Image 1 (spheres, chains in turn brown, red):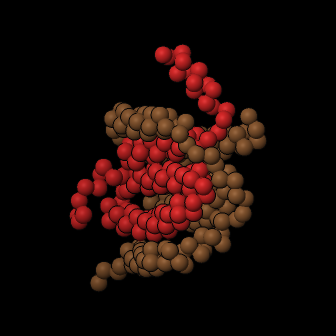
Image 2 (cartoon, rainbow over the protein chains, first blue to last red):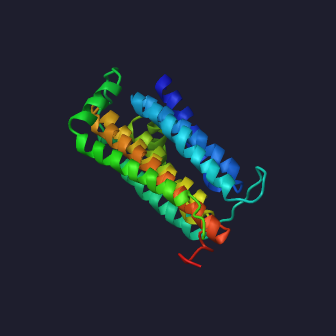
Image 3 (cartoon, rainbow over the protein chains, first blue to last red):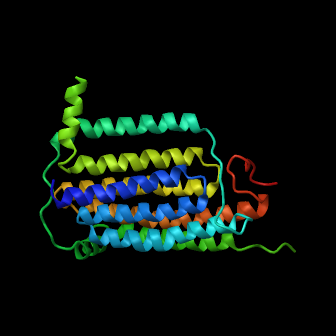
Length: 167
Length: 115
């Protein structure tokens, strides 16, 4: 068990435990803040997988953008002015069965094929330049489509969220 | 059979490989699915959705790393993050509109598009 394994288990524990809190906590603010730790843990896993650009992107966009949006959503859609915002659950038993089935089948597939996996890449160079070159050459069309989608989605979101004045 | 399976799992645990990352992503996926189904509040459903998207991204990047640092997986993950940002913005705008109209964001109480 070397350093890689120990760091992996640390980040995996952060990710999984805080994801449990996100899903099972009845307090919405606790759930939103533990989603922060889930995103950090996943970013740590990205670093372990030599995806440095993706790890920074994960922190910038998920933690800096999406999580802040979520927190604003939680606070704007509740009348109580405190951190004590509760939420209920429905369909608990069927959801638990379905999630267990999905996890069991995924884990069975992964476990059945784990001995056939290749060795990890040993290249230690940064990936940012290579990803940029890929985005500008092979993936230039998806890149442009994604930029148009982002523009349309943000304009649409601004239009939807603006409160229309009834005349 | 059971003891051999157990000992195989024990021998498998310390040597971190591709499958470990995949198992973590499977746990994230199952938790996100559970959250999406059980939560009544629409924003908590969105949080479950983010967990599922993160699970998919972990898979993409794990295969990118263990497939000889093939960067196509990382580019796909970039697109997933872009779409997640767009989806979160639009979904929260819709949730705010639902709240203004119905004074609630519980998905089981909002069953009509208009009042």
